Length: 467
Image (cartoon, rainbow, N blue to C red):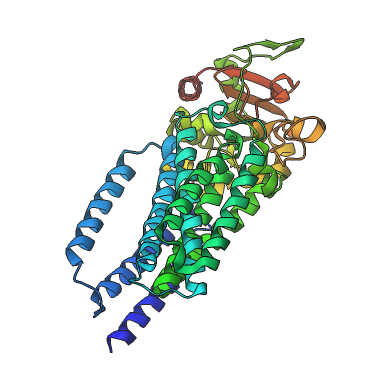
């Protein structure tokens, strides 16, 4: 009876995972989808705790304390984290999931080498795989967090020919795993410890050459690694819900990674070995070489916006940094009240994590119907009176289409210059993550409005109200 209850609960949990994941594909259903998946996980946890494992000690106190402590930390983090730091929090959560897989795998391996647990070759391979994937996810996510938080600079961890270092670590890891499989229990626990250290270092080295421009892809990839490590843990313990949940996370993370690479017109291999991005510097305002960027006053910009028929906002990471999402929504409301059609163009890799801009605008209660994906926006730019770029850079750079020597050449971008007029809100003429100058700044249709995005938007709001 209890076994049937457990299996039924796991089936229900798996169904909620699938339905919740499906709802996450749309911004207007994502919140409910996340809640549904969380409910399914709660059902699975309760069912597992109720089921009487006769060969296991009573560890309910440890489990409950751990859940309460982890839940409190998660709740506090969710309350305190700023939207600009959301990618860092995702990286940390990924890393902790990988760390769990490392702990579980090491406990199994140490028990195996101590003769307390029997593992055949297939089971041993699964345990070693969980250790490998979990360790790479753990230290890789920690380094990603450090880069996103500005605690670690690319130049401090990237070595010349770093891709060859990673190839060496990969070959060494595969070789050691093969050796441990062949030797079985005769090698002793020292082999497991060496493998753990090697894979932890490999995870750090794996992320080291990847630049800031590719961090959204890295976060997605590491998320899929964490899912695969959870699936491996499910195989170790014969737990169906861990297996299903891990496979879903791993598969969805992998699909998202591929889609984001396609959005950048780059292969995953190129992302992992390219060391692309890292930013750069440029004059703060005005000119770069013989090129001169034209500026617009706040009053002129407000008049253009107020008397336009259609306006398209293009948000980028600068919008998140300035915490300007509510200001842009207020300006949206003023323009809409005057009969202006307002929409938002969202690039797949804008910001620092998948869906960053969607979440940011949802926080400001921007209707989902106003959010356009890349293809939809590009089809409408020619009939748009003004495009307002707020903090975006590489995703609106014409060099992606007309400069074969550019590192972003071939990357699908938002072709904002097709609109009748463009206004770029930016602090300075500095480069984006790709470290290249944006030729849009010098385009005949473009005007620059320098300053903090939030202050600039608030100034535009004041000017519009006075008209």
